Image 1 (cartoon, rainbow, N blue to C red):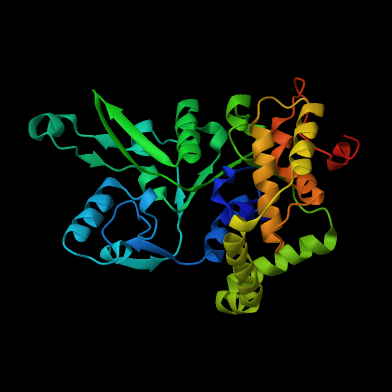
Image 2 (cartoon, rainbow, N blue to C red; image 1 turned 135 degrees about the vertical axis):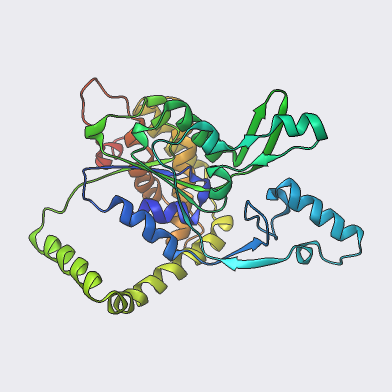
Length: 330
């Protein structure tokens, strides 16, 4: 679970992660802890979408207008024309009861007709841009809302259309969904849209369970001491993530790696091509995370653990599971 979250932090284009697990296995705690690991971001001041001033291709329409106006006024460097501040990433919660309008936002049609100007009331997706969007009990959400979420996660854009009027804004976020399978499952078509999937269970080792109890009580009794004790590990992991983010663009793969991925997906009878593409992206991210610029077969095997379990064809009532050893003979 922790590895899947970190991989999405290194490469948000992986498509998010679906975490299945029994209650009380720290699913929510792990997601919220992820934000503490990530570096500060530059965000345009007074932008409701928190645009990155150094990424012109992903600016909202308002920031693009401000940037164009600054250039017309003689600004030498476009990126300096947008005032920004540094902020930490946030975990944005999406409640189970959320309606589509609350998620995507709304357009004031009457205002548009009277003035000819678009008036957009932002929703949860606007707040989630460049943050972590956390959906607890995602299996209890309305299927249509889940569809909207997954579309935005894949495209990086949220488009609202009402009565012939449309408005689009950037919606690039790390999507994390958690669920307890005992409360029902998602439709296979929706599960397939999550890039990675993991299943978590409680510890069955006595020493590990004792450590969980000790850590929890240490945090409750003296939070400052708890943070201080684990800060060196936090710093080391944060630096590893930042290094992997910069290294990712340099990672290369061979034709043999592509063939290996294709053979695995064909042999295991996986539907569609999302699994192939997801395995390649995940293998590249794993390589960068390990400080390498070359994808190895071991990266492909490790990627399979995250990309294939929720895409394997199952018979009714068959448990979800994946043994990585089955690809050794492919």
